[in-house]
Length: 103
Image (tube, rainbow, N blue to C red; front, side, top):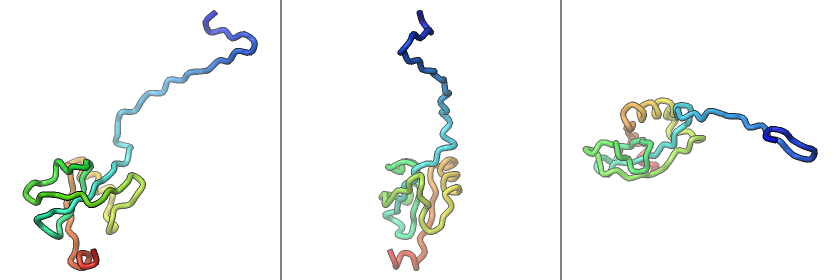
């Protein structure tokens, strides 16, 4: 008989959990790019190819990745970077002359 369990049988309770398709709560992986035409210009994007980076400053070369549990370089705000990527598809930033000399 369905739903009944005899001696020695096991029953499992199945709980239905809705799948949250809203990725807003997930921390994104951020890719770091450098411009090949403007030495000091860098960018953050959420895709490995940098498809939404401005072509006027390209070509772009990926130089690193910031995992979901890592902080961005140079004390930059992850929250601000993610907001810019969600709004514009990227965020640009410049290396200072002092930082470039060390790199």
